[in-house]
Figure 1 (cartoon, one colour):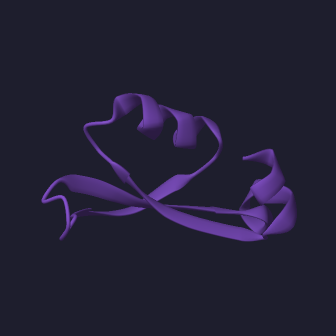
Figure 2 (cartoon, rainbow, N blue to C red; figure 1 turned 30 degrees about the horizontal axis):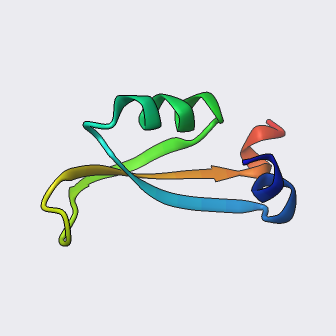
Length: 58
């Protein structure tokens, strides 16, 4: 995660809502949920999350 945050100013990813450990991991790394949707492939609810260097500087 640290490598990605140093290399990229903006990260975006989907995380399955039922995977509480992953959701907590990303929230603890300052990712914010942008929306909730159902994955077309897995047919599971997931959050679209993002992190930006600019937001962490605020």
